Length: 331
Ligand code: ADP
Ligand code: MG
Image (cartoon, rainbow, N blue to C red):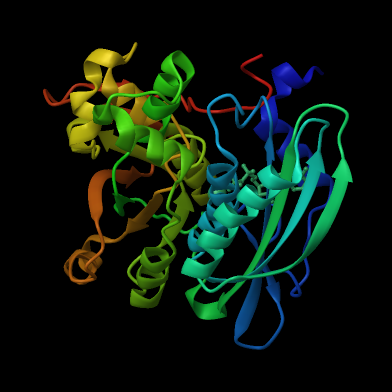
């Protein structure tokens, strides 16, 4: 079968099946934002790795090296945040093509270091090699959490409410504007570009959500709300209804509507790279959740019926395809 038919997630599912781990040493392996590995009776080591490839994930014509370093750290810490964990260590592997010099690598590590300092994460290793073509960055992040507080993708139950932190869609809108016009921008769209180039991993919020024991499941929004919600639902054996009027959109995104090719809601539903946290909580926890002081919006409800539907203001429902970023399908 062709990769374009199987898709990125079909391929991962195949790998997962052939290496199915049924060991108490790995309570969680392939299939969540990070693996959870037993290192002591009460806590788990969280491990995740993410690769950023020039021409696929970033374009050096409008991405500065500081931002690239920043983002490489942020996207990995976001996966630790999605487990409710504390990031502790990371490793960086770089493949460097001709034409990239020491100053650029220094800028990369300035950006990388800025995120690490913010979260008190230590860089403890990695690998360095040449590349014939294209800059490739692979980061592995390690973190920890209490076994009892681990937040998986698989815990959502029918009737749970669905929440998302922050606002959605700005990163994808920012990318579209960067592609079209480069970085010489009017200040109105600066926030969108910032969100794309320097996302903020929601580590503190993830931790608060886990410690409150309010949530039943969690994932970070890297591929797009519709697709990441479908991952969460698939792992939980459930479906969802999303209320289109409740999806949090920033004023910056709404104001930029005229500069974008599609409706703003589409950027929020399918755009990806927001690195916000998407989680579920039963109705009896809503009061406690509101008291946590995190910016989270209720956007839907988990259903027994599989599939995701979008409910419009007039109450009409339509199925929402799990659209978002798939590395092979869009070719
Ligand atoms: P995320 O978007 O949270 O980084 P991915 O969609 O990249 O997650 O991956 C989903 C799951 O599949 C994760 O548990 C990840 O570790 C695992 N995974 C992805 N690619 C591979 C691979 N080539 N081999 C083993 N596991 C993989
Ligand atoms: Mg993730």
